[in-house]
Length: 390
Image (cartoon, rainbow, N blue to C red; front, top):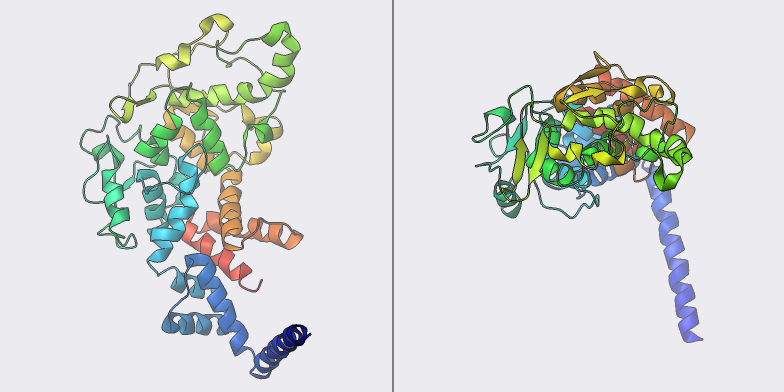
Protein backbone atom coordinates (compact mmCIF):
# COMPACT_ATOMS: atom_id res chain seq x y z
CA UNK A 1 0.00 0.00 0.00
CA UNK A 2 2.84 2.42 0.84
CA UNK A 3 4.43 1.71 -2.56
CA UNK A 4 1.11 2.35 -4.31
CA UNK A 5 0.72 5.65 -2.49
CA UNK A 6 4.24 6.58 -3.44
CA UNK A 7 3.59 5.83 -7.12
CA UNK A 8 0.38 7.88 -7.05
CA UNK A 9 2.24 10.74 -5.43
CA UNK A 10 4.91 10.67 -8.12
CA UNK A 11 2.31 10.57 -10.89
CA UNK A 12 0.45 13.50 -9.37
CA UNK A 13 3.70 15.43 -9.09
CA UNK A 14 4.59 14.69 -12.71
CA UNK A 15 1.21 15.89 -13.95
CA UNK A 16 1.55 19.03 -11.84
CA UNK A 17 5.03 19.69 -13.19
CA UNK A 18 3.86 19.31 -16.78
CA UNK A 19 0.94 21.62 -16.12
CA UNK A 20 3.19 24.27 -14.58
CA UNK A 21 5.61 24.02 -17.51
CA UNK A 22 2.82 24.61 -20.00
CA UNK A 23 1.43 27.44 -17.85
CA UNK A 24 4.80 29.20 -17.55
CA UNK A 25 5.51 28.74 -21.27
CA UNK A 26 2.15 30.27 -22.15
CA UNK A 27 2.64 33.13 -19.69
CA UNK A 28 6.05 33.93 -21.14
CA UNK A 29 4.63 34.54 -24.60
CA UNK A 30 5.85 33.23 -27.97
CA UNK A 31 9.56 33.21 -27.10
CA UNK A 32 9.86 29.76 -25.55
CA UNK A 33 7.80 28.23 -28.36
CA UNK A 34 10.13 29.65 -30.99
CA UNK A 35 13.16 28.57 -29.00
CA UNK A 36 11.80 25.04 -28.83
CA UNK A 37 11.14 25.17 -32.57
CA UNK A 38 14.74 26.24 -33.14
CA UNK A 39 16.06 23.38 -31.05
CA UNK A 40 13.78 20.88 -32.78
CA UNK A 41 14.98 22.15 -36.15
CA UNK A 42 18.65 21.84 -35.19
CA UNK A 43 18.19 18.37 -33.71
CA UNK A 44 16.46 17.10 -36.83
CA UNK A 45 18.88 18.66 -39.31
CA UNK A 46 22.15 18.02 -37.52
CA UNK A 47 21.37 15.27 -35.05
CA UNK A 48 22.95 16.95 -32.03
CA UNK A 49 21.81 19.81 -29.75
CA UNK A 50 22.90 23.34 -30.70
CA UNK A 51 25.13 25.59 -28.60
CA UNK A 52 23.39 28.39 -26.73
CA UNK A 53 24.69 31.01 -29.16
CA UNK A 54 23.52 29.06 -32.19
CA UNK A 55 20.15 28.39 -30.58
CA UNK A 56 19.69 32.09 -29.81
CA UNK A 57 20.60 33.04 -33.38
CA UNK A 58 18.14 30.52 -34.80
CA UNK A 59 15.45 31.67 -32.38
CA UNK A 60 15.95 35.27 -33.49
CA UNK A 61 15.53 34.27 -37.15
CA UNK A 62 12.30 32.42 -36.38
CA UNK A 63 10.96 35.35 -34.34
CA UNK A 64 11.76 37.59 -37.32
CA UNK A 65 9.69 35.34 -39.56
CA UNK A 66 12.62 33.73 -41.37
CA UNK A 67 12.84 30.06 -40.33
CA UNK A 68 14.77 29.24 -43.51
CA UNK A 69 17.61 31.44 -42.27
CA UNK A 70 17.49 29.54 -38.98
CA UNK A 71 17.90 26.29 -40.87
CA UNK A 72 20.93 27.64 -42.72
CA UNK A 73 22.45 28.58 -39.37
CA UNK A 74 21.95 25.01 -38.17
CA UNK A 75 23.57 23.63 -41.31
CA UNK A 76 26.76 25.55 -40.56
CA UNK A 77 27.51 22.87 -37.98
CA UNK A 78 30.21 20.53 -39.43
CA UNK A 79 28.31 17.54 -38.04
CA UNK A 80 25.60 18.21 -40.63
CA UNK A 81 28.15 17.16 -43.26
CA UNK A 82 30.20 14.51 -41.45
CA UNK A 83 27.23 12.65 -39.99
CA UNK A 84 23.77 13.78 -41.10
CA UNK A 85 24.50 13.95 -44.83
CA UNK A 86 26.71 10.87 -44.75
CA UNK A 87 23.86 8.86 -43.23
CA UNK A 88 21.41 10.46 -45.65
CA UNK A 89 23.33 9.33 -48.74
CA UNK A 90 24.86 6.06 -47.49
CA UNK A 91 21.87 3.81 -48.41
CA UNK A 92 22.09 4.96 -52.03
CA UNK A 93 25.55 3.42 -52.36
CA UNK A 94 24.84 -0.26 -51.77
CA UNK A 95 22.34 -2.93 -52.76
CA UNK A 96 21.16 -3.73 -49.19
CA UNK A 97 20.54 0.03 -48.77
CA UNK A 98 22.38 -0.03 -45.46
CA UNK A 99 23.39 3.13 -43.63
CA UNK A 100 26.20 1.20 -41.93
CA UNK A 101 28.85 1.66 -44.61
CA UNK A 102 32.09 3.59 -44.64
CA UNK A 103 32.48 6.99 -46.22
CA UNK A 104 33.32 6.54 -49.90
CA UNK A 105 33.62 8.58 -53.08
CA UNK A 106 29.86 8.32 -53.78
CA UNK A 107 28.74 9.66 -50.39
CA UNK A 108 31.56 12.23 -50.34
CA UNK A 109 30.45 13.55 -53.73
CA UNK A 110 26.85 13.90 -52.56
CA UNK A 111 28.06 15.70 -49.41
CA UNK A 112 30.29 18.04 -51.38
CA UNK A 113 27.64 18.89 -53.96
CA UNK A 114 25.13 19.78 -51.25
CA UNK A 115 27.72 21.76 -49.30
CA UNK A 116 28.81 23.77 -52.34
CA UNK A 117 25.32 24.18 -53.78
CA UNK A 118 26.31 22.44 -57.00
CA UNK A 119 23.08 21.97 -59.02
CA UNK A 120 21.96 18.60 -57.73
CA UNK A 121 20.24 17.60 -60.93
CA UNK A 122 23.78 16.97 -62.23
CA UNK A 123 24.49 14.31 -59.58
CA UNK A 124 24.12 11.64 -62.30
CA UNK A 125 25.87 13.50 -65.10
CA UNK A 126 28.62 15.84 -63.83
CA UNK A 127 32.32 15.32 -64.45
CA UNK A 128 32.84 15.78 -60.74
CA UNK A 129 34.06 13.88 -57.70
CA UNK A 130 34.97 14.98 -54.18
CA UNK A 131 38.28 13.74 -52.79
CA UNK A 132 40.54 14.09 -49.77
CA UNK A 133 44.32 13.99 -49.75
CA UNK A 134 44.91 11.27 -52.33
CA UNK A 135 42.35 9.44 -54.44
CA UNK A 136 42.88 5.85 -55.56
CA UNK A 137 40.90 3.97 -58.20
CA UNK A 138 41.65 0.67 -56.47
CA UNK A 139 40.89 1.27 -52.78
CA UNK A 140 38.82 3.40 -50.40
CA UNK A 141 41.71 4.52 -48.21
CA UNK A 142 41.35 8.23 -48.97
CA UNK A 143 37.84 8.25 -47.51
CA UNK A 144 38.63 5.93 -44.61
CA UNK A 145 41.33 8.40 -43.59
CA UNK A 146 38.79 11.24 -43.64
CA UNK A 147 36.30 9.18 -41.66
CA UNK A 148 38.73 7.84 -39.07
CA UNK A 149 40.24 11.26 -38.39
CA UNK A 150 36.80 12.87 -38.03
CA UNK A 151 37.83 15.31 -40.72
CA UNK A 152 35.73 18.45 -41.13
CA UNK A 153 33.90 17.79 -44.39
CA UNK A 154 32.39 21.26 -44.27
CA UNK A 155 35.88 22.60 -45.07
CA UNK A 156 36.51 22.84 -48.86
CA UNK A 157 40.23 22.46 -48.20
CA UNK A 158 39.59 19.03 -46.65
CA UNK A 159 37.00 17.71 -49.11
CA UNK A 160 37.43 19.24 -52.55
CA UNK A 161 35.71 18.77 -55.85
CA UNK A 162 37.72 17.87 -58.96
CA UNK A 163 36.79 16.54 -62.41
CA UNK A 164 36.67 12.74 -62.50
CA UNK A 165 38.29 12.79 -65.91
CA UNK A 166 41.44 14.45 -64.52
CA UNK A 167 42.15 11.89 -61.78
CA UNK A 168 45.46 10.08 -62.31
CA UNK A 169 44.70 6.77 -64.00
CA UNK A 170 41.20 7.79 -65.12
CA UNK A 171 39.88 5.84 -68.10
CA UNK A 172 36.97 8.18 -68.84
CA UNK A 173 36.88 11.51 -70.60
CA UNK A 174 34.82 14.49 -69.46
CA UNK A 175 31.91 13.45 -71.69
CA UNK A 176 31.91 9.93 -70.21
CA UNK A 177 31.88 10.80 -66.51
CA UNK A 178 28.44 10.55 -64.92
CA UNK A 179 28.58 11.87 -61.39
CA UNK A 180 27.99 9.24 -58.71
CA UNK A 181 27.26 6.61 -61.37
CA UNK A 182 30.95 6.47 -62.30
CA UNK A 183 32.38 6.71 -58.81
CA UNK A 184 34.30 3.74 -57.49
CA UNK A 185 31.64 2.92 -54.88
CA UNK A 186 28.80 3.25 -57.38
CA UNK A 187 30.58 0.99 -59.83
CA UNK A 188 31.39 -1.66 -57.23
CA UNK A 189 27.77 -1.80 -56.10
CA UNK A 190 25.96 -1.65 -59.43
CA UNK A 191 28.34 -2.52 -62.31
CA UNK A 192 29.67 -5.70 -60.70
CA UNK A 193 28.58 -9.02 -62.24
CA UNK A 194 25.01 -9.09 -63.55
CA UNK A 195 24.09 -7.35 -66.78
CA UNK A 196 24.28 -3.70 -65.64
CA UNK A 197 20.49 -3.57 -65.38
CA UNK A 198 21.12 -3.21 -61.66
CA UNK A 199 22.57 0.24 -62.20
CA UNK A 200 19.33 1.39 -63.81
CA UNK A 201 17.14 -0.20 -61.14
CA UNK A 202 18.93 1.44 -58.23
CA UNK A 203 19.23 4.75 -60.05
CA UNK A 204 15.44 4.68 -60.38
CA UNK A 205 15.01 3.77 -56.71
CA UNK A 206 17.40 6.44 -55.46
CA UNK A 207 16.62 9.30 -57.83
CA UNK A 208 13.07 8.72 -59.08
CA UNK A 209 11.81 7.08 -55.86
CA UNK A 210 10.38 4.21 -57.87
CA UNK A 211 11.32 0.55 -58.09
CA UNK A 212 10.52 -1.56 -61.12
CA UNK A 213 7.08 -2.52 -59.76
CA UNK A 214 6.06 1.14 -59.87
CA UNK A 215 7.49 1.55 -63.38
CA UNK A 216 5.89 -1.59 -64.80
CA UNK A 217 4.22 -0.86 -68.15
CA UNK A 218 3.24 -3.70 -70.50
CA UNK A 219 2.07 -1.29 -73.22
CA UNK A 220 5.57 -0.46 -74.49
CA UNK A 221 7.02 -2.33 -77.50
CA UNK A 222 9.52 -5.11 -76.87
CA UNK A 223 11.93 -4.00 -79.61
CA UNK A 224 14.92 -3.35 -77.33
CA UNK A 225 14.58 -6.28 -74.94
CA UNK A 226 17.84 -8.23 -75.02
CA UNK A 227 18.38 -11.79 -76.17
CA UNK A 228 18.82 -13.15 -72.63
CA UNK A 229 15.12 -12.70 -71.84
CA UNK A 230 13.00 -15.67 -72.88
CA UNK A 231 9.91 -14.80 -74.90
CA UNK A 232 8.20 -17.92 -73.59
CA UNK A 233 9.29 -18.54 -70.00
CA UNK A 234 8.13 -21.95 -68.86
CA UNK A 235 6.73 -22.46 -72.34
CA UNK A 236 4.08 -19.77 -71.84
CA UNK A 237 4.46 -16.65 -73.97
CA UNK A 238 1.67 -14.95 -72.03
CA UNK A 239 4.06 -14.59 -69.07
CA UNK A 240 6.45 -12.63 -71.25
CA UNK A 241 3.77 -10.33 -72.69
CA UNK A 242 1.89 -9.77 -69.44
CA UNK A 243 4.80 -9.65 -67.00
CA UNK A 244 8.33 -9.54 -68.39
CA UNK A 245 7.60 -6.80 -70.90
CA UNK A 246 6.42 -4.55 -68.12
CA UNK A 247 9.96 -4.02 -66.83
CA UNK A 248 12.27 -5.02 -69.65
CA UNK A 249 10.63 -2.95 -72.42
CA UNK A 250 11.65 0.21 -70.58
CA UNK A 251 14.68 -0.92 -68.60
CA UNK A 252 16.69 -2.65 -71.33
CA UNK A 253 16.81 0.30 -73.73
CA UNK A 254 17.81 2.62 -70.88
CA UNK A 255 20.46 0.29 -69.47
CA UNK A 256 22.19 0.38 -72.86
CA UNK A 257 23.77 3.61 -71.62
CA UNK A 258 26.03 1.49 -69.39
CA UNK A 259 27.32 -0.83 -72.12
CA UNK A 260 30.98 0.18 -71.76
CA UNK A 261 31.20 0.11 -67.95
CA UNK A 262 32.31 -2.78 -65.75
CA UNK A 263 33.57 -3.42 -62.22
CA UNK A 264 36.83 -5.40 -62.22
CA UNK A 265 37.01 -7.60 -59.11
CA UNK A 266 40.69 -8.31 -59.70
CA UNK A 267 41.84 -4.74 -60.16
CA UNK A 268 39.21 -3.53 -57.66
CA UNK A 269 38.20 -0.61 -59.86
CA UNK A 270 35.78 0.49 -62.54
CA UNK A 271 36.93 -0.15 -66.09
CA UNK A 272 35.65 1.62 -69.18
CA UNK A 273 35.96 0.04 -72.62
CA UNK A 274 35.24 2.88 -75.01
CA UNK A 275 33.50 1.60 -78.14
CA UNK A 276 33.51 -2.01 -76.93
CA UNK A 277 30.34 -3.48 -75.43
CA UNK A 278 30.93 -5.44 -72.24
CA UNK A 279 30.40 -9.21 -72.78
CA UNK A 280 27.77 -9.28 -70.03
CA UNK A 281 25.39 -7.49 -72.42
CA UNK A 282 25.59 -10.42 -74.85
CA UNK A 283 25.22 -13.41 -72.54
CA UNK A 284 22.56 -16.11 -72.94
CA UNK A 285 21.89 -15.05 -76.52
CA UNK A 286 20.25 -18.39 -77.25
CA UNK A 287 17.37 -17.61 -74.91
CA UNK A 288 15.88 -15.61 -77.76
CA UNK A 289 18.28 -15.07 -80.69
CA UNK A 290 15.88 -12.60 -82.26
CA UNK A 291 16.16 -10.23 -79.32
CA UNK A 292 17.99 -6.92 -79.26
CA UNK A 293 21.77 -7.07 -79.66
CA UNK A 294 23.66 -4.27 -77.90
CA UNK A 295 26.22 -2.79 -80.29
CA UNK A 296 26.89 0.59 -78.66
CA UNK A 297 26.08 2.64 -75.57
CA UNK A 298 22.96 4.17 -77.12
CA UNK A 299 19.87 4.41 -74.92
CA UNK A 300 16.19 5.08 -75.61
CA UNK A 301 13.57 6.28 -73.15
CA UNK A 302 10.47 4.32 -74.11
CA UNK A 303 8.69 5.66 -71.02
CA UNK A 304 8.26 9.14 -72.43
CA UNK A 305 5.02 7.70 -73.81
CA UNK A 306 2.46 5.78 -71.81
CA UNK A 307 1.79 5.73 -68.07
CA UNK A 308 5.37 6.65 -67.13
CA UNK A 309 5.16 9.87 -69.08
CA UNK A 310 3.72 11.22 -65.81
CA UNK A 311 7.29 11.25 -64.47
CA UNK A 312 7.59 14.55 -66.29
CA UNK A 313 10.45 13.87 -68.69
CA UNK A 314 11.91 17.18 -69.88
CA UNK A 315 15.36 16.27 -71.19
CA UNK A 316 16.63 17.55 -74.53
CA UNK A 317 16.10 14.21 -76.31
CA UNK A 318 14.40 10.85 -75.81
CA UNK A 319 17.60 9.02 -76.71
CA UNK A 320 21.32 9.48 -76.50
CA UNK A 321 24.64 7.79 -75.88
CA UNK A 322 26.29 6.94 -72.61
CA UNK A 323 25.62 7.31 -68.90
CA UNK A 324 26.16 11.05 -68.82
CA UNK A 325 23.38 11.92 -71.24
CA UNK A 326 21.04 9.47 -69.50
CA UNK A 327 21.88 11.21 -66.23
CA UNK A 328 20.78 14.49 -67.80
CA UNK A 329 17.49 12.91 -68.85
CA UNK A 330 16.81 11.68 -65.33
CA UNK A 331 17.95 14.86 -63.60
CA UNK A 332 15.68 17.07 -65.68
CA UNK A 333 12.53 15.08 -64.92
CA UNK A 334 9.89 16.30 -62.51
CA UNK A 335 10.02 12.95 -60.73
CA UNK A 336 13.68 13.59 -59.90
CA UNK A 337 12.81 16.86 -58.18
CA UNK A 338 9.90 15.40 -56.23
CA UNK A 339 11.99 12.40 -55.20
CA UNK A 340 14.80 14.49 -53.70
CA UNK A 341 12.29 16.58 -51.75
CA UNK A 342 10.46 13.48 -50.53
CA UNK A 343 13.70 11.92 -49.27
CA UNK A 344 14.64 15.07 -47.39
CA UNK A 345 11.10 15.43 -46.03
CA UNK A 346 11.11 11.87 -44.70
CA UNK A 347 14.44 12.40 -42.98
CA UNK A 348 13.86 15.85 -41.51
CA UNK A 349 10.18 15.53 -40.61
CA UNK A 350 10.70 11.98 -39.30
CA UNK A 351 7.86 10.64 -41.42
CA UNK A 352 6.97 10.37 -45.08
CA UNK A 353 4.49 12.89 -46.48
CA UNK A 354 1.08 11.64 -45.37
CA UNK A 355 -1.43 14.48 -45.52
CA UNK A 356 -2.81 16.85 -48.11
CA UNK A 357 -0.74 19.64 -46.58
CA UNK A 358 2.42 17.50 -46.70
CA UNK A 359 1.94 16.56 -50.33
CA UNK A 360 1.22 20.17 -51.28
CA UNK A 361 4.38 21.26 -49.49
CA UNK A 362 6.45 18.69 -51.37
CA UNK A 363 5.23 20.22 -54.63
CA UNK A 364 6.01 23.74 -53.43
CA UNK A 365 9.53 22.81 -52.32
CA UNK A 366 10.10 20.88 -55.57
CA UNK A 367 9.17 24.04 -57.48
CA UNK A 368 11.64 26.03 -55.40
CA UNK A 369 14.28 23.33 -55.89
CA UNK A 370 14.07 23.83 -59.63
CA UNK A 371 13.99 27.63 -59.53
CA UNK A 372 16.89 27.78 -57.03
CA UNK A 373 19.22 26.02 -59.48
CA UNK A 374 18.58 22.66 -57.83
CA UNK A 375 19.94 23.61 -54.42
CA UNK A 376 19.59 20.65 -52.06
CA UNK A 377 20.66 22.83 -49.16
CA UNK A 378 17.61 24.98 -49.85
CA UNK A 379 15.44 21.83 -49.85
CA UNK A 380 16.74 20.91 -46.39
CA UNK A 381 16.13 24.45 -45.12
CA UNK A 382 12.59 24.78 -46.46
CA UNK A 383 11.65 21.31 -45.26
CA UNK A 384 13.01 22.00 -41.78
CA UNK A 385 11.04 25.27 -41.67
CA UNK A 386 7.85 23.42 -42.58
CA UNK A 387 8.35 20.69 -39.97
CA UNK A 388 9.65 22.76 -37.08
CA UNK A 389 6.23 23.05 -35.48
CA UNK A 390 5.39 19.36 -35.42
